[in-house]
Image 1 (cartoon, rainbow, N blue to C red):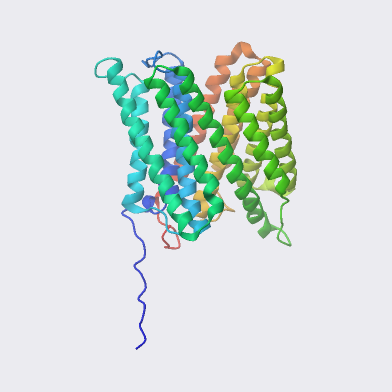
Image 2: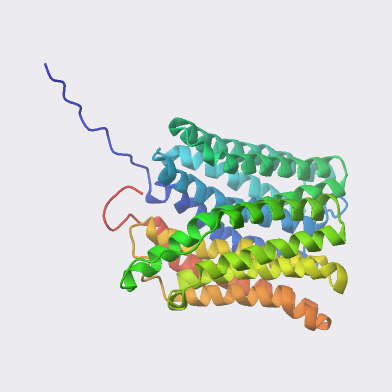
Length: 415
């Protein structure tokens, strides 16, 4: 007798925002970007009560931009993209909510620490950090576990490099916590910088995969024939190796000669890569030129690292240039595009406000990193303009994209 296989029950979740990870994590990243930058503006101007003997306030800011904002975008992207790469269903519904709550509770702990909310001095402050450590660990473990199971199920071992970066990010975060609890601020600094460069490494790795794909998909419908942008394996290998040397030197062995050679090499290789991706029609598509400008900003940042030891300007300017371009503009450009495509909306007709979002992030890049080079006397003004531009960008993102991320797909499909 022939058996009949009944169709499996389609997936469902209590709310559309829990359908796939990009929905809840991109929404949270946008809101958190506003909250954390507003909080930093208050702390930067002396209105916080952080115990600076436990952690330098600048490191608090750096930690939350990396392990708070950036990692939320990474989680939303990876937990969605791995489903596409492997064909395996990723966490959704209450399971996804559990992963998200771990991220959220850790962020609340760091905010409480940043504003000095205590219940009995330094011990009270450490309670917040212990709670944040636990929830940060659970968040990273659950995210990496979901990715590992999907990769293992289809034996797609080429994705193990991403898992290795997630493991190293967990280690970097652990070093930051260890430095705080042991009163070793230098160790916390190493953890933060290591985490930052691992995020940039992820951006370079994932960007190499998706930016050419986005350009081809974004332009081909408007051209007589589909286009194929140029890529080179030697560029991929050279970029990876030179970047590895660069961040090891900058974090662990500050040699100006090696730093200049490595940073210059990374910048030049990726400029060459951009030439292969370039098409004049990208300037008609804000979702494409924003990605191009983000990569260009990263190249400029590496050139700043290359000349910084010899021109004597602050190392922080180069770091912020790379952070704004590689973390700020790149993540905004990715989220605005992915949020449309994965909710069944046209990537060719984004909200008109995206152009202003990208221009505001470009303003942040110029004001935070380039204008202080030519006019250091107004440094505080440039920083505050950059903070305002960042907040304005994400206010627009939340206003236009949170409704998209929270609504069902127009085609009725799950996703």
